[in-house]
Amino acid sequence: MSDTIDIRRLNKPASPTPRPEEGVQKETGGIWAFLNKDIRLFGSSIPDKVREGFYMELSTLLEAGVDIRSALDLIIKEQTKKKFGTLFAKIAKEVEAGSTLSAALERDGNFTAYEYYSVQIGEETGRLIVVLKELAEFYEKKIKQGRQIIGALIYPSVVMVVAAGAVSFMLTYVVPMFADVLKRSGGQLPYITRVVLGLADGLKRSAGMLLLIAIGLVALAWSQRNKSYFRKWSTRFILRIPLVGGIVRKIYLSRLANTLSLLIGAKLPIVQSLRLVRKMIRFYPIEYSLEEAEKDIQTGIPLHKSLEQHSIYPIRMISLVKVGEEVNQMELFFKRIAEQYANEVEYQTGMLSKFIEPVIIVVLGLVVGVILIAMYLPMFQMGQNF
Image 1 (cartoon, rainbow, N blue to C red):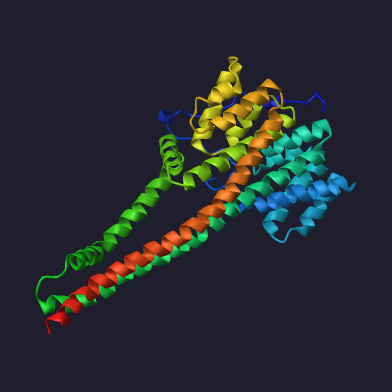
Image 2: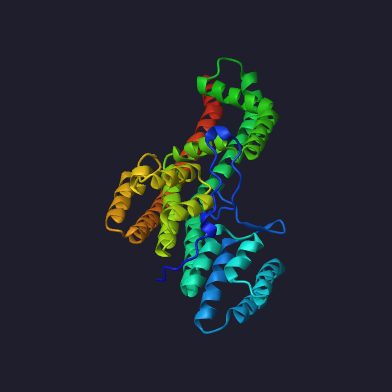
């Protein structure tokens, strides 16, 4: 690969990530989803699937010998939604006016630094087709991971919502009907019946208040979502959730390693690579650790030494990074790390789905069973008295 890559634009001072006490952390247009936003255009998001298709189709057409202007025209004609066609038409117009593709992407404002700097490197080294394929593969993996998480959680989530609704309905409407009958019978009600009746009465009286509290908490979380203290607290909470926390952690580590592999493979200096990744990943522990790593590397501290100071990185990953630095093969080792964590995420999301489903069914059965026993037990006692 050529060593004449122009990285002058990358050497601009980067705005430091604020510490927890420094207030609001501005959004930087991150490209990760599970907790990140998609590109925005006219108030609606451009899905990662569209970006994947754009980069894949463009690389395929260029590889077939089509010039970039004609390739962009073909992509525009294939768009079924006007807003996407308008976006790509704007880019094509700038390219036709003599702009490079990377500059057009940067000026458009809807693409991340990772995307247009990667394209710039591809243009300057004659590897544009390779870079476009890597970008398409990057988004393909991101989409796949998102689908794995959704697939693992959608069924349990639906079952939990339905179960909560069913139990609330029983406690709010069905149990009070039994309560009138039981109170007329006189005598001491069983303990379990008194507990269920108390829960039903409390739920009926507090339903409105509980709904307002829930709405208030959601609104508060939404208003504070970009503040450093909230991001720090929320990510810690997510990482401590059994099973789910481990999967979320590995998803971000996989994306971090995959992105660093691509950037280092393009011969981008490690400090600039970390800076670009930090701008993209909207996950506080990694974002903060990469800012610290930038400073440490500039003072001569190896990357693995800097990363091992942060608990988000497991010992296994630190060891692989250390070996990669020692043999000067960081691109290869980051690629292996990304593949390992991607495979683990795929396996664990499948296991999570299989584990949660029976647990929810058992818990739901127990809750409904307890309610039924509590209601019918006094009736059985009344029948024995006659």
